[in-house]
Length: 221
Image (cartoon, rainbow, N blue to C red; front, side, top):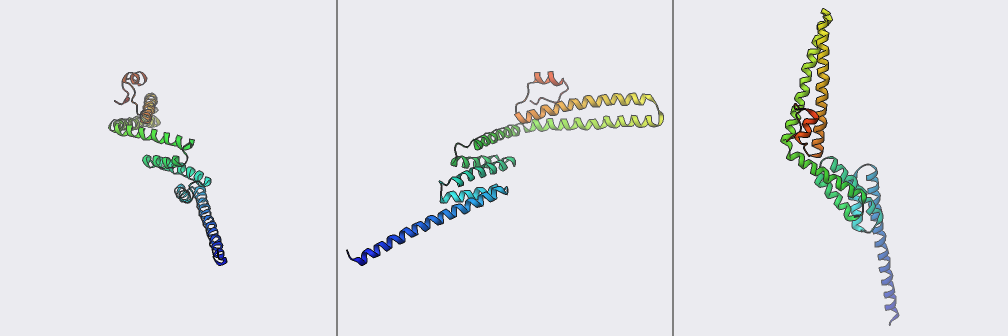
């Protein structure tokens, strides 16, 4: 084999090795840059940009441990934000993307369960919204009625201020007790109302009557 050909072959192989090494170095540089961008974005609380940066790093090197860990963390943070805003479908989709990278992530699994539970509760609330809305308006009216009783109490006190008629004080005391009872009753209604909205499971009529009396606005049918 001619010496010139051998030299050319060696040179070609050397160039290929150099180019291969350069390509590997460029890929490593891209991954490191994207991971750094993700770390900075995450530190600044920008989960969306962080998720994008880590995702771009994984496109270059799907096996990079730092990019994978960062992507999972960013996905959890972004899903939490979407969940807080009530974007349950987007939040679940983001969690699923993170689980595709790390199926064993306890944080993502727990977050997904929380989001799905909240989504179910919202669906229950929406399906019962007319009933819940009516009960909420009744509670509002009950609190507004307290203003009328309080106004009468203040009028009794004012009358006493210039008549010194103790009957006015007696009436004020009576109305003060009425306010306390109504406030306690309304507070109980609020507590039960919150439980209904949270659980989406209406109480039974028998249980409600035993707890709040026949005059209670709740439970909801």
